[in-house]
Amino acid sequence: MGSPPFFFEWASRLLPWLFPISFLILMIGLVWGIGFAPSDYKQGEVYRIIFVHVPSAILGQSIYLMMAIFGSICLIWRAKLAGMFLRSAAPLGASFTLIALISGAVWGKPTWGTWWVWDARLTSTLILFFLYVGIIGLYSSIDNKQRGDRAASLISVVGVIIVPIIKKSVDWWQTLHQPSTFSLTSSPTMTADMYLPLLICVIGFYFIFVSLLCNSLRAEILTRERNTGWVRKYLNNKVSE
Amino acid sequence: MNNRNTLFFWFKLILKRDLALSFKKIATFLIPLVFFLIVISLFPLALGTENSFLSSLSPGVIWVAALLASLLAVESIFNEDFRDGTLDHFLLSGEPIFILVFAKVFAHWLVTGAPLLLASIISTFFLFLPGGLVLPLLVSLLIGTLLLSLLGAFGSALTIGKTAILSAVIVLPLSIPILILGVAIITSAINNQDYLSYLYFLGAMLAVGIPGLCLATVEAISINYD
Image (cartoon, rainbow over the protein chains, first blue to last red):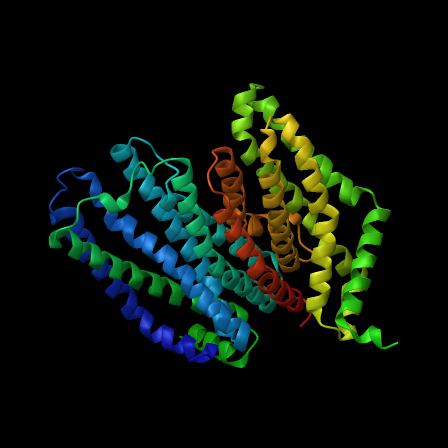
């Protein structure tokens, strides 16, 4: 599993299935959520942006956790594939976090009346985005790929230890400076009609993430291993086809 | 001489060398200090000079200035030794890198962090911080600048040979808890609230940060020497 050629073949076989399946799940979730779920009694139709917002926020956080796990694998066992995972996952994680921030702002304008509030949750998501940018900046500035992998692994492992402290301190900062004006947790508890499509959307986003990840991992493997025999063979076969 | 073999001997040696180098070039410890005071004096110029307004802003202003000042100076911790080969020699000597990192962080703090404490007292006059708050300010800055030196060493070890701005982008988000807690200590002292709990938490972060961040820095240095 850890060897790049094995993963490459496995991913190539899986990808033609992964993309259609994830699009299907996402379509079901989004069409159900946006088209058929009942509208919120307080927020009206605006709330429907949560079917994009919540899954991307969840992914933005869990991708960071995954990166820390794979980062420690990369540091401890020097697994090449774990380093490649980090490189492929970081831009995806940053994008999902950015989608969460932007969709949150779009939702906040009609609901709260402003694009942005310094709410604890928003602030820690913004900081998460900065952490992603730092990781991407770090590994892309290091020419040696192996060193870049390990540096990015180290910063994500250290980061994931500090992230809970950041979250906690941001919470304190909120209670210290101003009462939390808006809170996502105080919104009315959802009915199953809203909850189920949201769940499907979350699953669909995970599938999309895995598909995109496998896709960019394949590209990463091909570039990194371009001087090895099996990549030459593979490319020759592709050309002759 | 068997005391050559103790770790403390190496600690003292590196500390002495770093301090001698810093005091040879007056810029290394004077520039961050002046930078700190310049940033402090920018705020009244930008925001107006009303006393009560400035004094309510002063904890945040002092802390942001301290954060920036100690991060700007951080690039010099490993970069010069990396360029002239001293770092290679130390790694070849077989002594634990941990002690190198430890001594270098401490030297960096003595040269840039400790003078900031002094400058922060001057800045309280600029920003009209009430006089009774100097103690919480100093204690919070004492722990905070130590933590910032540790974090900065980690960032600069990760980005050896790269631009300082990259290490700032990496380290600044991670230093947000220090900033929040440091400001919280002073603000709750202003409001006559109990600030010790924040101070304890900052102290706990330092207690974890000294071994934890030093180890991370060691790992970051060794990445450059595979």
